[in-house]
Image 1 (cartoon, protein in one colour):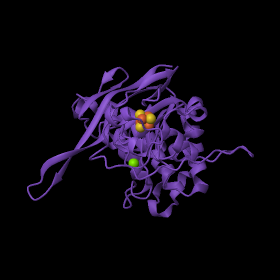
Image 2 (cartoon, protein in one colour; image 1 turned 180 degrees about the vertical axis):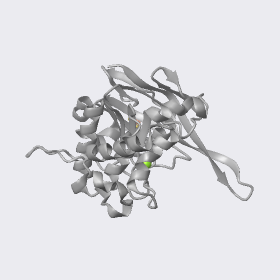
Image 3 (cartoon, helix red, strand yellow; image 1 turned 45 degrees about the vertical axis):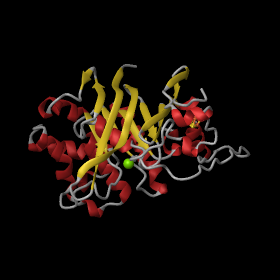
Length: 320
Ligand code: SF4
Ligand code: MG
């Protein structure tokens, strides 16, 4: 498999403005030195609690936000230094599916005009071709061609997310960044939308960066899984090793909350103490040390770096 995307030492810091003069007094390290690669056709699941920086990471990879530092290399090209017009072809190739199918579709536009918008932006196809592409796409995502002239409010959450997926696919992208695409949906429709995403992945040979807040959603879907905590990647491994041998204490805790499908098998639930600390003032050393049962002295002083402890299995923890 060819490498499609390489993210190297990516940082995205936001200044925090305080007081009347609104001078930047501190910063939130939303993404703090994250590296990973993504091969063509695979799905990398990216998991962590809210506020861990996974959405920021997605938007920074997409170049919606410029990183503070680090590299985003797509098909061998560094994107972070490119200007708007240089980025244009890549904006076509990398698309995003958003979390909330209620707010991400413009309620005043018909489905047809929502789906044609990317064509307008990129000056593609004639009117007639656009009509036909919309109809084909609606069918591909399991909706009726006749829905094109209706408005978003006429659809259920699951149908709206199908429309969101359709919109992301209109420009025939290679890479899709899906930011919690099913977490706003009823549990009963989540599986249908995930199945659709898997179907179109096979048909269209898509690569996914799939962001989720727990390990159960990405379990069936991902080739590899990365776990984030307070802006940092703490573990990254093949799906099978991550679920059978989680190494980082945080991954172990997240995994203990995932129901075990086999009857008779019990996994002890690890309850984490306290809340996620503020990203404005993260703990020194290992950012997880305030909640880690295995915390040692070194953990409060030295930041653990990612190490490859078994083939393709990376972890950032002083236990290894
Ligand atoms: Fe726990 Fe230390 Fe590992 Fe951090 S580095 S997860 S505090 S054992
Ligand atoms: Mg988010």
